[in-house]
Image 1 (cartoon, rainbow, N blue to C red):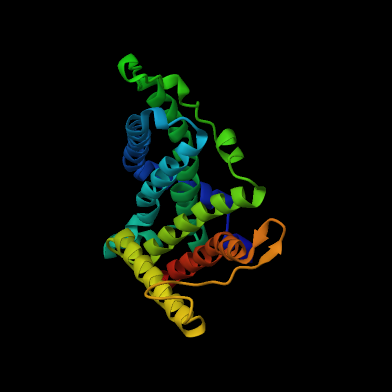
Image 2 (cartoon, rainbow, N blue to C red):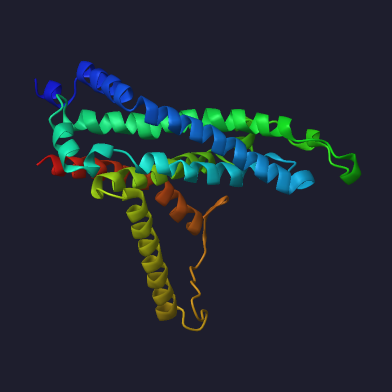
Length: 265
C-alpha cells in the first residue's frame, strides 16, 4: 500500500502521456532544434577543418559541444514551477512527487539523450554527404570517417574512461536538472552562474592550498598536486577525476527530488 502511494506504473504512464500531449509542440520544436544544431555543428567543424577533419577523435569536441547545448532542454525541466498558478495546478495532479520527478527525468534526460544521440548520428552522415570535393585545394570528403559511436568509443583507452565520459554527461545533465527545481525563473542561467562561481571558488581554494603547502613550487595562480602512481595504468589525479565523474549525479538527482518535494509543501 505504501509503495503504491509512492509509485504506481499506471499513474506514471498516465502522467507521462499527459505531459507529452500538453507539451507536444514544445517537444517537437525541441527535437527539430536538436537536429538542426547537430547538423550545423558538424558541418561547420568539417568545413573549417576540411582535410584536418580525418579521424574519429575529431568528432569528440563537436559531440561535447552538442551535448552541452542540450543542457537547454534539460535545464528547462518542470516548466510549471515558473508560474505560481501553474505550480499549484501541477502539484494537484493525481500523481506522487516521485512520479512527477521521474516523468521529467525520463523526458528531459533519458529521451533527450537517446534522441540527441540519434540526431547527432544522422547529422554527422548528412554533414559528410554535404561536403563538396575541391580538386583545386586537393580536398576529398571521403577522408572523413563515417561517424559511429562504437568506433568513437574505441578511441578511449579503457572501459573506465568510457564509463567516466558517459557518467560525466549524466552528471552535467543532473546539475542542470537539479537547478530547474531550485530556481523558478531563468533556472538554467542561474544554475550556470552558480556552477561558475563554485568552480571559481574551488580554484582559488586549491591555489591557496598550493601556496600554503608548496610555496617553493608554485607562483601566482598555479595549482600543484603531487602525482603518484596507484597502479601501472592509474595515477592519483586520474582517480580524483574518476570519482568526480562517477559520483556527482548520485548527489544531484536525489537533491532535485528532495527540492521538488519541498516545493510541494
